[in-house]
Length: 402
Image 1: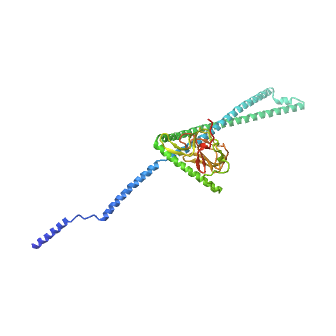
Image 2: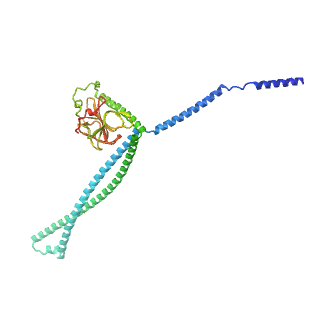
């Protein structure tokens, strides 16, 4: 008994000691796993946010890119409409000529029918009197008989010619009728196609008007566009420098020293005497500009000359066509090299009438006024540059008469 009691006492003591021991601390490996899970969750959330931001950036289309896309599509569709209109004009001209031919041929065939009727009536009378054979055999004089035979042969030849002319005229008349029908069908198809293309033009123009209205009415849109246009101006500066360097490499001539006027006469001697590139008035001047409504500040490297759509654009001085094509923010653009590091730029034009490498005369028509890439309707954007740096065009153009 005394041994059993001792054993129980030992067990109770051990149990009490176990109960009084503090809880076991977590192992370091458990803390590491927890932190790793938290880090993975944070990274997952960060990746999701980055994906959302990238998607939002993707959806936020550049206003200038959107305008360029619309303008390019609009220019292409206008060109298609112009081509269709030209084909319609040609088809209408052909129809008019064919109808004129129809009238003449119908009149000629009526005359030929009348001649043939007269010949038939004459032949009928001869037949009623017994025919030509008794006349020939009834005369004993060989000379008169031979003359009568020749006369009848001549009459037969005339009749054959009249019949042949009648057939030819009839064939030509039928041919003209068929051609009229073909041209009429073609004209109807062209008109339907032109109407469809014009509807596309109207839709693109409506999209353009809506975009420009947002730019004009909403400050955020306006400021975005101003920023993008500033970037476009920088790209144009860089592009012009690249063209200059390319020319210098080709010519293997050393670049002119900055600030030194070229000694040879030419463009530099005509400050204040250059002809205007188009008929119109300057509505946006060179230099710093402040928007009257939003107060945004911009700097213009050229001037905007407001003019009617389709007005001629001429070269202000003889030169070589350095570039023609679409340039983001400027629409259709032409750059002329006038030598001695002088250049002129013509932007927002509708039709480009020269190609790169062409030599042009002063006053030669190189384009027509348009609104490609423009924000405020038909106008010509015009720049003068020397050694790549923009000059005030108003100081170079001759003073207009009031």
